Length: 525
Image 1: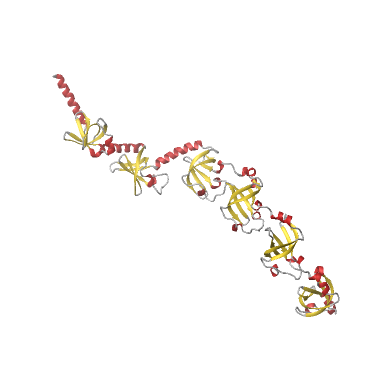
Image 2: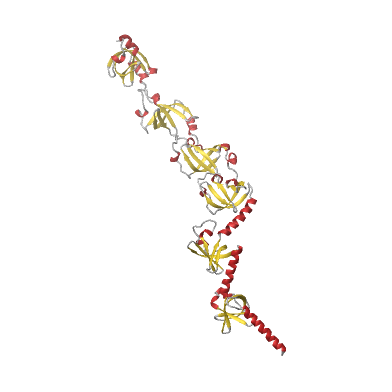
C-alpha cells in the first residue's frame, strides 16, 4: 500500500515537472509517436503529448518522418484539444534559425544561404527559411552587370545587420570574398619568387596589357610580354576569365607589385633563327604587313622576314607591293640572310625562279640584232620588252641618226615592235642597252658627204642664233653653222642686229665632219 502511494507521488511529480517545462512559446524536444492523416503526434514528456498539423511538412520532410524520431517543436498553446496540446515544427525551426543568425552576426560566423531571386537594389537569399537581403554592392568583389546565373546557387554569407522584430536580415558575400582574398594574398606573397611559373586568371584587359589574378595579388602582363610576335591589342590573345600560366618577371614585395610574362615561357625564336633558317632554305609564310619598300612575312610566332621590293619579281619593276599582295596571303620565299642580333631576315620571292639575266647572257651577244616591243617611255629613252621578260634600254641618243629627238614618243609608240642592235649587256647589274640608229640608214655617212662638197654653195633658213653663231637648216635633219666670229669680224656689227630667225641666206660649205654630224659654213661667196 505504501509502495503504491510512493509510485503515485513520483508520477505526479514527473507530470508536474513536465508541465513546468511546457509553456506557450517554449521550444522543447519531442519524439514522434504516431503519424495520422492530418497531424503528427509528438511525445514531449511523461504523460504529455501534442500534435503538429501535417501541413507543416513538405513531401520531402514527410518521407523522412518516422515514429521514434526526435524533433524540435514550439508550444503554440497549452490548451488541449482531443487530449493534445498544440505544437508547431515551423515556428520552432524559425526561432532556432533566428537564434543562430543572431549568434552568427555577433560572432561574425558565416552562414550558408541560397540565392532565390532578384529585387530592387540586390537579391534575395534564403537562409533556413528566413529571407535575407543581399545588396548589389555586396554580391561580389566587383559589381556584376548580370546576376541571373547566381540564382539557385548556395554560397556562404556574412550577416552585417539583423533585426528580429522586423524580420530584417542584410547579408554580404563580398566581405567573405575579401577575407578569403586577403588570406590568399598573404600566402601568395610568401611563395612568390622571380622566375617561377604561377597560375592566374585574366581579371581585366587594357590597351597596354592585362591584369592577372595570381592568388589574391594582381600582376601586370604588359602587351610587350605577351607574344614574341606582333599583336595590336591584348584582346587578340586573351579574354577576361581565361586561366593561364604566367612567369614572374619582377616582384617588388614592399610595393606588392608584380610584373608578369607570358612569352618568356618559351625561348626567344631569334636565338635559334640562324640555325633554323640557313640561306637558300625555302620557306612558307603569311603576309602580315605591306609597305612601299616590300612585304613582311611571318615565318613563325615572333619571326618576321622582309621581301624587299627588288626581290619580288625578276622581269617587272614592282612599284606598289599592295597591288600584288594582301594581308594574310600565304607566300613561298627563299631565305637570303639572317642577322639575329638585328632581328632581320632577308627573303626573296623572285629567286624561286631562274634568273632570266643568266639566260640573256647565254643567248645574246653585243652587236646581235633582236626584236622587242616598246613597254614604256622615260625622258631619257624607251624600255623594250624581250620575250624572256627582260627590259632593255633604248637611249634617246640611240633612237635615230636623222634628227635630234626631244622625247622617244616622237618616234616610237607603246606596244610597237622594233628591231634593234644590242650595244651592251651587264647581267650582274641586270642591264641591256640597245640602239636603233645602228641598223637605220645614216645620211651623214652615206649621203651628206657626197651632196655637200667643200667650196660649194648652199641655200638655207636660219633656225637658231646663239653666241656661237647662226644655225642654218639646209634640209630636214641637216644643219650648218656660220660662226659669229666670222660675221662680226667682217661687218663689225653684232649678229643679232644683222639676222633674224627665219631669214633665208646663201652660204659656202667650208668643212663637213660626218662623225660630229656637223657642216661648217661661210658667208664668203
